[in-house]
Length: 278
Image 1 (cartoon, rainbow, N blue to C red):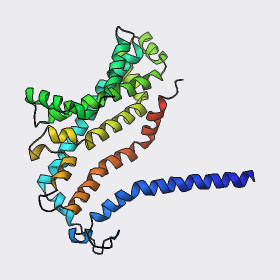
Image 2 (cartoon, rainbow, N blue to C red):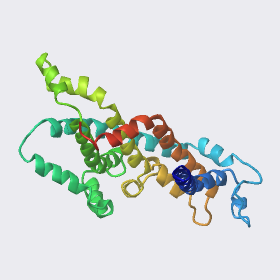
Image 3 (cartoon, one colour):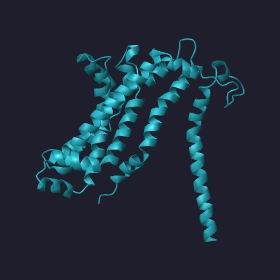
Image 4 (cartoon, helix red, strand yellow):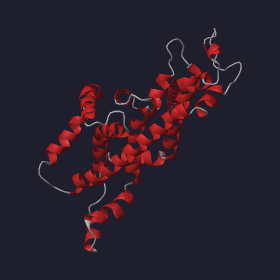
């Protein structure tokens, strides 16, 4: 009876997991097949998952349009810049919070945590005013600096927690041999903190790539728009290019999917490492 009960429990767990997976994946599947349909077929009744006639015109239209490819270039440039700068600052800050004692350390930690409780929408108008005052409106710098305000607090907390799990004997061994703390950080701790760095980097890239509200507010020219704004601009005054919108959505999701699959091993290790301190 105990064995049968365990088998039944395992069956229920797997059934719920598969059902949840299908529920979460179905919108992506629907988006993919809509991108292969013509606009007229999209609204056919009854609705069909598979298109009667497959067409690649939406994808061809995107790849042959410099106007639309610029959206992807902007997203890559902003997301990669934000990720690189955030990781650099977060590694230095996390090392400092983890290894040194200084005045107002606790207060700074509380302030970093407090920034995570502020809804971004409430900061939209103040940041717009600051960006205009600094004459950075409609520039890459406006997006990069604004995004870093939201990515840095989490990244610093993440790296501080990861460095806390690493024994201080590693730093001390380097210093005994005549090395500096800066040398210990970049030559010893950082190579051993790859899972935490990758997890933080994936989160930062994901947040920067998908951001819509500030990208819409802090830019005005077509040349500065990112992928989320580019999808929104395919909504015309009298007609929507639904198949191209879905195609751009699939292409916009592809980098995140590839990044996560490539870094999955490090990502899981980095997200869970801070839970238990050895």
